[in-house]
Amino acid sequence: MTDVFPRRNLPGEAEQWGRAHDERVIALERENTILRQSLNALNRSTAATLSNLARQINAMPIVWVGASSRTGFGLNTVGWHTVAEVKVTVPPGKETASVVAVAGGAAADLTSGGLTTAEARIIIAGSIVSPRFSAAKDSGASVVNNVISASYGVGDMSTALVPEFTVQFQMTGLNPAAFPPAAGNYASLTVTATF
Image (tube, rainbow, N blue to C red; front, side, top):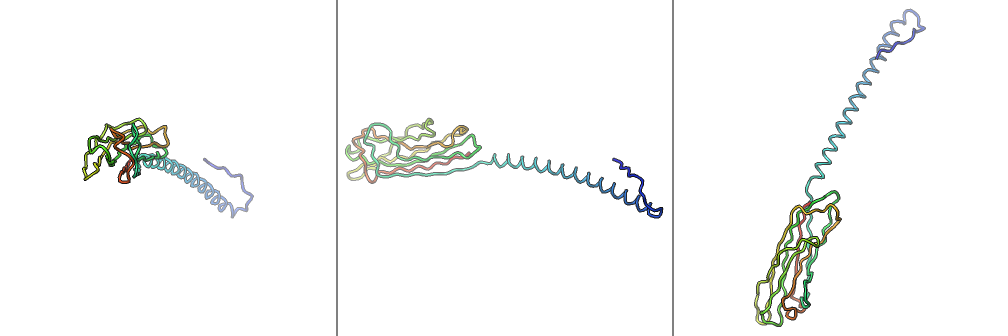
């Protein structure tokens, strides 16, 4: 862009100074335009870098761990009993999870002398059900403990529509009359979720 300044009303000796002044103003305008273009390009580059960085941060896995335990319960009614439960909160923006649950428990057979047994299962998000885990017998003098260890996991579970889900450790007694509430009955559940 060429600026054309009007003729100055300067004395003859100042005419050269006026031209030098005009050239300096034109040079400053040109440098300002170049700097403005460089700043705009830098802003676009910074915005693109920040956007890429945000995508990378959101793609980083988040590991969540929770645990629950309980004692003194009984398995003295027919059906499955939730003996430990963990609620998992889904981080914002995360649409899938890999979940691993590890559980253990024991229920005392106080009446059958070891003729019956207990079983357990793990339920993830209300619908993903593990196979059944059978108890091992830990015989004492008058009480037979039914000891269960269980672990179950699921990968790439969709969490896009839920803010949280529950993982349950459930037990059942095959003969409910043999498993009344007892102080030594225990259950523990540890859940690791990677989003």
